[in-house]
Every structure is written in structure tokens, then in C-alpha cells.
Amino acid sequence: MDVLVESVRQVWEGRHGAPVIALDGVTHRFQSGRFSCVLGPSGCGKSTLAQIIGGLEHATSGRVEMRDPGSPSATIPDGAASVMVWQSQNLFPWRTVIDNVAFGLQMSGVAKRERYDRASALLATVGLQGFEHHYPAQLSGGMRQRVALARALIMERPVMLMDEPFGALDAQTKIVMQEELLRIFEVTRKTIIFITHAIDEAILLGDEVIVMTSRPGRIKEVMEVNLPRPRTLEMVNTPEFGALFDRAFHSIRDEVRRAMAEQSAAIRGAA
Amino acid sequence: MNKSPKSMLFQRALPTLIIVAFLVGWQLFVSLRGLQPIYLPAPLAILSAMYQMAADGTLFVNLGTTLLRILGGFLLATVTGIGLGLVMGMSRLVQRIVDPWIAALYPLPKIALIPLLVIWLGTGEAYKIIISAITAFFPIVMNTYAGVCQVDRGLMKAAQDLGASRRQVQFHVVLPAAVPTIFAGLQLGMGVTIIMVIAAEMIGSSGQGGMGYVLINAGQILETETVFAALVVLALMGAAIMKLQAWLGDWLVPWTKIR
Image: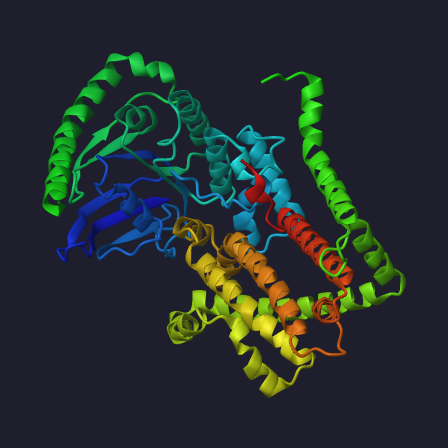
């Protein structure tokens, strides 16, 4: 599924009356079956972009379109072709693991037997067999994120939007989850749009890295990542990786500095 | 501190030992000083009064009557309170209309409504159930409304993303997310229901029974043993209801017990 983002602009009502431009003139074509990483400093509107693409927020102007390369004339309603994986997981605390995973199927009226079978199978593939009847609060952060992943995968939607899904995990768990995601990508070849502020993560996972400017969020540059797939963690030590890291780092460093200067100015202004 | 098994056992048993010592001391104090039972009956006399009430059946008739009234008032308050609270949480208009009424009526001590309700409804069952229902209604409606309002937006968005319709979001996300807060409101409501039913039974309840009537009647004819016996029964009833609620809570909202 191709995802076309055209001139997306998002303006928020500011706290002191002045409007805040979160996103401005964002145009990009996310190609079907590619893993795209959106890299930006915090507050650059990258999460907002993910929600606009997912049909969960309405842009002030501009449009998002999803198009099946196989049947380009078919129109797809907002949000119907994508599913979101959130940093905070947003698991339902009153539902057990299996009922969280089966939520989407339940909403579309799939019978209990079938949705449990499918949810169990998915839980096994993300390594959570035996935890079907635990509540989310009984699991570790990494396990909760696996549940969230399974809950998204069960929807079988062609586009997966991932909003800093590993941002809150500890370093080791994060590495394991990245490997897991790479494995899933190899098997499913979904169109993945992955939001992150971690440079190494963006390069390790993505076929392309879209660097965003700080407020207002614009696309600063698009870097192609030509590392071979399947990707492995060892690639971090290759010169290609190092060169890409350098380029992305210099690109984003100015943005982070600018964002920090703006934030301290805002705090000084408010005081 | 010494943690030998012996001292652990002693620490475990100490609360019970103190209660026993208190009762024995009370018994001895009354019999040695020769106190009149009108002022302070001995524990054994209270026990025998309780046995008497149980033997002639008055205990069960009056306790049953009181429990039925509590249940009636509580159910009425639960249905109306949760119903209105949910509607308020889901409709901004309803919330705006209802808000000033709740703000005005909530601070009013509900027991002050007894004279008015007696004028309108007499001193029968309707009055006792309505006064307790009105009192319990407020904590229930306010907690329900607060519970619905506090639902995590992220969860609602996640459900929408997973294909839930607007109605499914209300039923599968907003409602279960509000359940712990609603349940806390029900616990508050149950507490005030018990108070108001007993109070209503004490005021103008001649011949209609109930533990409140037993209490006030025994007090008026200076049957102090019966007063104490009724108090003990009420305390046990309250403890039983609290236990039942805790058990219901574990069953209804098991996920809040984890961590």
C-alpha cells in the first residue's frame, strides 16, 4: 500500500493565543512494502504526522491518501488500511492479553472461538505463549509492547504506523524488540512508517530515513539506507552505517539545538 | 526486634488477647462495682439479650427489614446515579443542565430533608427508601461522571484505530475504564444508605420495625442490654457488607488488584 502525504499542515491553538504550527508543507510518498523511518527532535510534530496518516487526527490542510499499487483506482477510507502501535502501548488494562489482542476482531464481529485461535497463534509468534490470561499490568514493558504488536498485526492491515514504540524500553529490551520487528518485517513485508528520535534505530530499521526539522515540522532531507536485508545488529559496525549515522547526526543536531533554544525562550517568556 | 517464632506468634495473637482482656475487664468492672444494667450492662448480659432476640425471632425480622430497606434505597440510587452519570459524561448538554442542580443539592445535609419527606410521603416504606436513595445518589452520580470524564484519550483513540465504532468505544472502553471509579462511588453510596435507613427508622417508625426502631424503642424504655445488642448486630452487619463489597470488587475489577 502506497501512502501519499501531500502538503500536510497542522496548526494548533496556542496557549497564549498565538497559533502553533506543528507541521508545515509535509509531502512524501511512502512506498508499498518499504520500511520508512521518520526521525526528528521531540516536539517536531512527528507523532502528529503519524496520527494524521492513521486517520486519527484531521490535518488543518493537505491530504493523505492510501493507494493499492495493484488497483490504483480503488479509494480507501481514512484509517482503514493502517494500524497504529503506540509508545504507551495503550493496552486496555481491564482486558487480559488475549482479549487485548483479539479486540479488533471482536469489534468487527468475529466469533470468540476464531478470534481466540488467531490471537493465540499471533501471541506464539511474538513469544508470549502462556501469558494469554495475564493482565497487562502483570507484564514487563517489553512484553506489553509485544502484546501491542500482536494486537496491531492481527488486523492484517497493509500499513503499520509505529509511534516511537520502543522509546520507553530499556536498552537491552529495545535491541531484542528491534530484531523481532525486523524478523516480522521480513515475513510480512508491510509498509511500515516508524517514528523515532533515535538515529541508530532509524538507520538500522529503515529503507529510508526522513529527517524532520523542529517546529514547524518540515521534511529536511530523505536519506536512502542501502544496507542489505535481512538486517542484523552487527551492521551497526560497518562503515556504511557509520557514514549514514554521521550524516543524520549532523542533519538533526542543528534541529535539536534550535528546538532547545526555542524551549528555553518559551520557558523564560512564561516565567 | 527479636524475630523468633515464639515472638511472632505472640505478635499475631496480641490483638485478640487485648480484645479478650477488654471484655473480661468490662465484665469484672460491672460485677465488682455492682453497676446498674441500665447504665452499663455486662458483656454476658448483652450476649444473653442478643440470644433472646435471636430466639424469639425479633432479631431476624428487624435485621431483615432493615437490610431490605438498605437494598431498596441502594438499588434505586445505583440505577438513577449510574444512569445519569453516564449520560452526563457522554452529553455535554445534559451535563450543563444537571450541573447547577447537583452543585446546589450536594452540600445540603440530606438528613434535613426528613421532615419534608414525612409530610409528603408519611412514615412508611417509601419515605425510608427515598431518603436513603437521595443520599446515596450524589456520590454515585458524581463518581460515575468523573469516571467517564477521566478515561484515557489514548485508549479511546487506540480502540477507534482498531475499528471500534463510536458506540463500541463507549461500551468497550469508556464504560470499563470508568468501572473502578463507579465502584468507589457505590461503596460511598452504600455507607450513607446504611446511615440514612437507620436514621429514618429511628424517626417516626413506630410498629414498622427495623434495627433503628429496635434501638430507639429499647433506649426509650431503658433496656440498655437491647441497645448494646442492637449496636453489636449493626456493627456486624456493616462489617459483613464491607466484606461483601471487597469481594465484589475483586470479582468486578480484578485488574486493579494487580501490581
